[in-house]
Image (cartoon, rainbow over all chains, first blue to last red):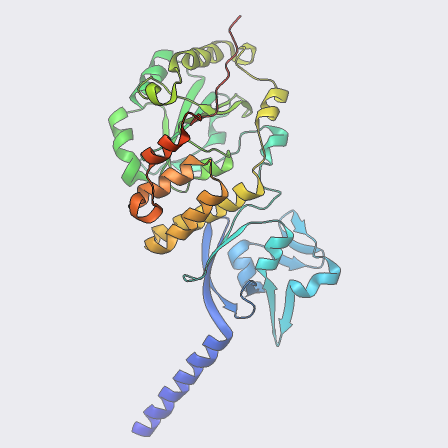
Length: 165
Length: 210
């Protein structure tokens, strides 16, 4: 019995050690939504995640024409594909940090907590300046009921920000 | 807020709405008492991620935007006080601005205070790369703070402030969350003194009514 337990604990320990050597738990915050996932530990400025996690965390999928979500598609430069996509064994990994660089998306990172915060891509920033359509938002009132700016079409709206601090 | 409630009530126009939005990381915990006290009939929302600050490229409060019936911006970001309580500090008279809103509500697009597209575009600026990075750092800091990593959040709040030094929302919110003197080596009042005559708000230019 004791021998069996020792064997079991050594196996578990081994499994933990090998997992840790290869993968690190991180939290990716994308479009404001946090997703805990596991990254393959390599160069620390890269964030290699599985295709499955890419979809789960960001909604993007890699297609022949590029990295796409609904109508939106960002082609990957063909000569630099290896910077973004890497197949190891049966798993294909995607470098989300390199992709952020490609689409000019700011990334803030907390090393200690393993949190990667992806900000607004260049194509999203200030897009309203061309159309002058007031950017929409959906926020709660004190009772938790949500309101969107677009609910108020047909009225003049005076938008005022304030703060308690 | 009680001032805006009176203004809204007196205008009494069903085609005009005030949407007031609290920029408060603490959410309802911090903002509720002010809203409850003012009992607004207009729409009072709570933005605990400073989304509107980011979306509209704002740098201080109170900041207002005029949006017409079609959802188009007809006066972009500008300082919007409803009374003269803090006039000694910033020198901005509330009266002419309230008159301008009344004129807009009465005359719509014919109001001289409504800007044409060209004027609005000249006043709007796409956020700089530094501002966008500051937005991400601030949002990361807020995420950490809300998840109990109060100490870990501070360097990211500082980075946001370094990247966008004129953004008072990012400074004052961070200072209010912990001991500003201890963690940031400053306070709001000290920073205001450092302005030394430089205006806290971008000057507001209202046209003379014909």
